[in-house]
Amino acid sequence: MSAAKEFMSMMIKFRSVSRFTLRHHKEFIQSKLDELGLKKYVPGVQSSPGWIQAQEQLKFIGAMTDEELDNPDLLRGLRVRRISWKLGKPEKEIKDFIYEYYRFSEMQRFVKYLHAAGLPEPKNNDELIIGMSRHPKFQNEYTMTKRQRTDIRRRQKRGW
Image (cartoon, rainbow, N blue to C red; front, side, top):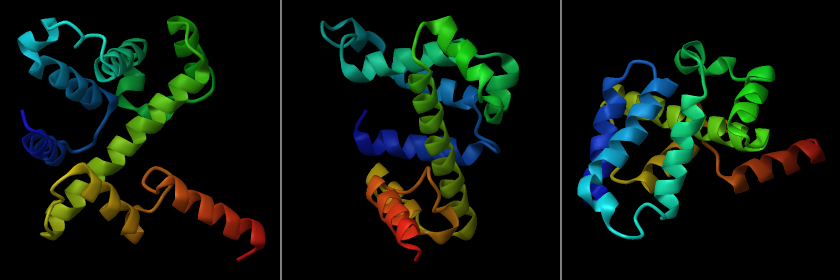
């Protein structure tokens, strides 16, 4: 599947979900792996970074309780520690995964906002991220680029 078709299918899935949870995130990752079909048996595919990352994300989600899958805001403190202990991974990796989930969730909110407002949808992932970072309603730690976050921190230190 081409990158443009894959992106458009992601956009359609985003619009159809009312509240994006880790269950939806799991389905999205699983569907990406299922799309490979027989290609996954080609030598080198299962050792590619994208495949390994998707498998790791599915392990993270598999270590969570049903309550955590339905309400990711509960993933703090001892729950993160429990998941990291269960998987034998450092807490930072679990927190990074949760951060990525929140970025994905913000993308879903932005796509729904554009659709509801009748605005044109982005054509690729880069346009989506740029649109989110420029829109005042969606400027938060999950949608800003690293440079934007650094600039804000500098301004805060200077007292602007």
